[in-house]
Length: 584
Image (cartoon, rainbow, N blue to C red):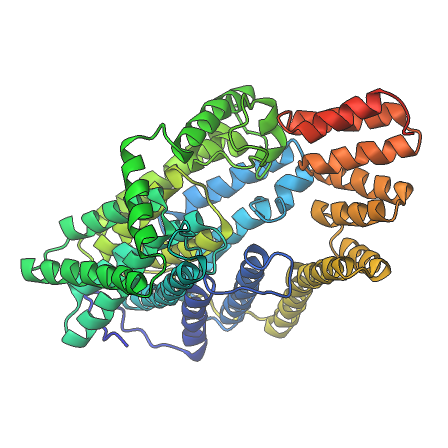
């Protein structure tokens, strides 16, 4: 374990048991959130991480309540509080005027970037600030995050090596995604972690600290390379450059760090090559991705440019409050001018700034700009703190990555915990508000709080987990030919989470398999009402309507499928079919 370097300005206030439990929970969250996966659910990546974040919030909020009732709570405020509150408020306003309110509030399946998730980010930040009291405790949270990044990076490297060995020397190399499910999301996370690791190395006060920090830096750097995420590469390099430029360190230490990282990367590549599979692919793929940085109009860069251009038209059509969180995929097809991603849906603008403008409008963009300015001012005030360089480098690395990508739950959850710890680090030993006296109605308030936390845990964690597990089992049963059990499980999932459009669509698909046109129509209509922007839902709805003799409704549904993706010939075929008359 890294030894704590003395930090000036650390408060000497006594630490209570609840204090320590709070800090421990923050560290556990920073370490475990990136690692959590759950294969018993249909969505093994996003939903499990989000459910763990909700559990963490409920536990931390309960501790805050208990400490308030006991008169121990010292509320810490930061200059980022009001900008974050304004950002959440803008998301709430956009949700109220969203193209689909249900979709804006809960988020789309697999993304879950609705208002609830945005509020979750803010809650993680505030509760982290209340749990971390000084820079030393903030450093503990940062190191927990670094430890998690090391494990994630190790998984990513092993994943890439195993993939290379399996695919063979002539196959293209798969991009590492580890426990994130998406290589760009992993790249954003590692672009945040890499500057923190470099800062730890440069600030290390002992040989053992330098060895541990150096290993973490090397492993994270290798994993970042293997994501082949160019935005992450740029963000990581800029973040590290900021750390080096704002940290006084010896030239020898910098040379040792660079040499160790380069040597370990070379060792991994050579090891794969000597094992006879994938070594050339690593070098060729890395070189090819690097060269595309010089030509942003080639490859996926060209796709992004097209999407960005079309997104400008979307933003101009509703500039003030946008179309609502996670509503991008619902409205973008109207403004899409080409088949930029083939037949795939485009549900994000692939640039966080454009995404905010499209979903939360100018108000959301202004709140985000306020947050960035407030952070820069906070950093300037606390720039002499020992960890300030790492905090700035990590934030810049992460945000630069988002300029050509977008916020996703796996990377965003640890970032907001880190931002809370970073705000405390930059404030130094700032005074908190004096704790309140013990509340007179303590037992009553405590019972009410515990009941509320229990109810929320059932609604926010238990029900979504059960519904997702039933959906997973339903699809397995369907694949095994047990249609009756599959339909029953899908119905259970719908009853547990009636706001989830994916569950309704799955029930419709199962009904279509059994030619139950009435049940299929009902399920697809529900999915559409809940905000589904999957063209197949409307395509199947059109077929069900046509079989039921509802030809006018079938045409409307088929036209909607074409609106959502007019470049998919399947949608045009169904539209032509329902227009030609009833099925034979």
